[in-house]
Image (cartoon, rainbow, N blue to C red):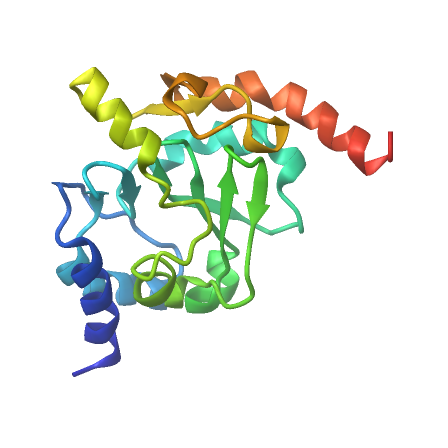
Length: 208
């Protein structure tokens, strides 16, 4: 069995085929694109885990304004950033420096419930599908409890651009309870919360 097949088997074993398939995104870097096209034959792209997260499907560039709204957290500097997935709370999986680094390009997480930009030196594109996602090592990304409550009480799925936006983030005393979340367009959420969080972030950096 090839390494590529092992990678795909880990992901498929954990999540199965997409709940709703999507057209796979295309990568700029040639080797990464060729690798992804082989992987896609097994993993697919689109919605997984009962439409809890969307991965590696076309159209994610539409959410680029989210990165602009929360640019105060995007450190260290990167030549390029690209969204490759997101979950029901608006947490964004971001690939950094794709054209420079290919399979070892870092994958980081912009996570609004904790207001963090998380990364790990071993979390790169080449390990994302066989380790970080299927083993649920991506911190805070797989907390489905509020989403499950939402499904039961609302009787519907969230729309493609809709998330459960947290009112009070966890570091500010908020809790992972349904009453602390509101269905909202993901771009609207990032734009609405960005100024206040940016101000608090800069004040903290200055020691105020």
